[in-house]
Length: 389
Image (cartoon, rainbow, N blue to C red; front, top):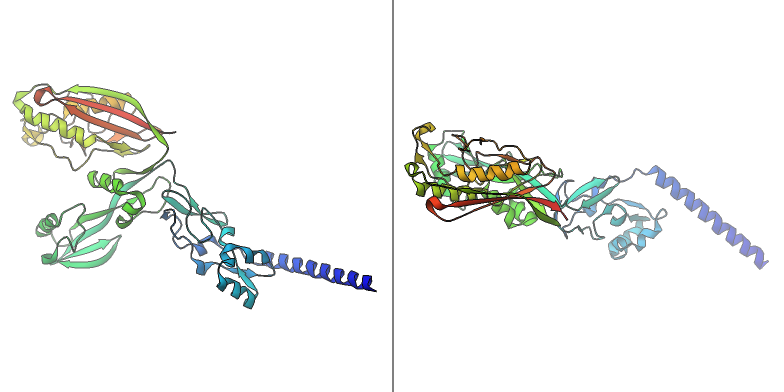
């Protein structure tokens, strides 16, 4: 008799198990999978750092407890009494974050070192590691627009505030790139509707991630990136992240200033040093075109053959050194230069007017410096290829 009862109990248990499994499979097949974007706390393509919260827990769906009783043991639910109580009262349990993500811990934080990027990959929300080399472009983000007696501040296409002309100052306008005094001078000269760029973002990232506004750049990529942006003109490529790479010298050159007293050798030496300063430290990513710094100034010497009667003499010797290392690395003649002894074309700024195009596979770094003084100034140039280790 006892044996018959045991057989009956076992049969009932087996039947319940089969029915439960069948019901679970039916429920699982009938439920539409959760869209990973529903649980993202940030738009896909956003840059995130290790430890950043990237999950919106309010978007995490619940599934029948019958279907996944094992979810109760996941730390996402087990360590949260609220989730356990909900499961007991409703018969539904929240889907563990680990089931829907990669590169994200059970608490919803990024585990990727460096500036990772939030993406949707298949049916998962993932934080991808940054590539060895990551770059973007310096592009306008904040404008000032004159409207009568007020300066409108426009950020990313939206007006954020109005500043009366007599209130323009460091506390009221962005002044990283242009001082408040310079903005005041511009305002006095400007016509109604004229605009001036006040701040810059990073956009056009090499891995396709979303643009980064000015207020986030230093946190995500560091102070050095901001410093680089401050020196180079709008539209310049900016290397924002590099890891596990080595510098390989590809070419080098030396040029001599020489004496041309009719153009004032002291001014020429000043311009040779300025040229080297303008180009030293410039990094040009593959497939991009870069110039020297816009913050370096040159001095003019009288030259009746030059447009306007003046030219930045002394720029040609360092330009010849730059030309030599660039073309010696297999890249084309920079824009704004010639193959002649007078290497810089009239009308081209020796820093921002010259454009070097990197046609190689990897970023290149330009180093330039000078020694000596006056007509005895020597200019040195080196070009390095930055390669993954």
